[in-house]
Image 1 (cartoon, helix red, strand yellow):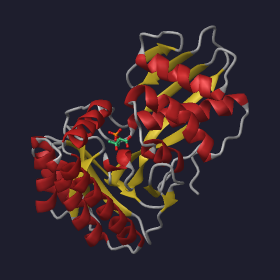
Image 2: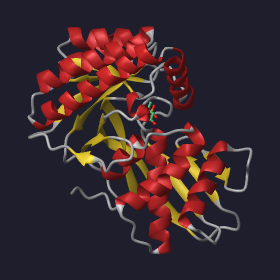
Image 3: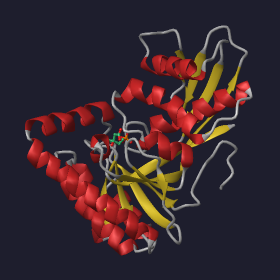
Length: 310
Ligand code: PMV
């Protein structure tokens, strides 16, 4: 069974599309997949949605993404892939990248091919492009590698090594958004007001760089403070929503050291850093009806091909 991690972005979503630094952390949740060459027609079966997509169905976006991965893998025979994921889609948790990476690994396993992480990411990027148009690559990098990464477009990802794992709380607002349209929304703002928006992106770059250093030093209060500032800059780019603001504010009142939206924004999830434990934050969120869970982030959080940590 092949696996790949879902993720949160601690710093730098959107800015990373425009060449700035991002910091992403894997969750101990994500996607798994297996593949076999027992099909007449290449098909991808996706749970929990009970979705069946054929690679030769050009009207089906998932089918097109599957076809792109098969092409990147150079597959010549029909192949059936079964995949499942345990995070919501369209919620900023890297659901699609996790599925893409798990599918790439499953196909390689079935073909008896050994792939390094770079090749996994190259193939999974073909999948991501179908959904996201202009993906920075941060989602597939963290889905494939796990742990915590500093990522800049066009450069090898840099693993970060905080001294210990910490709890993080994740709230799903129940609102889904399209990463592609949120990325286009920021690109339009950048085109219209290059100086103002460029300054926000530069500000996020500074926060991400300082955040990476604070993570490596295990200075979680400082990490949280920088996350709050990153959230304010994202909100200034109209990426937050009332529910995301409510989730972040409740988390801060309940003792989070920092809170922000994660991923594309416009809905999706809020995250709250909780080095002292996430129970009070989860209670506050549940009190107003948010779906939420606690996870851990850190260098040892990883779900890899064979499920083993490294
Ligand atoms: O796909 P999401 O919503 O988990 O977030 C992706 C992060 C973005 O920076 C918004 C897009 C990208 O390609 O980096």
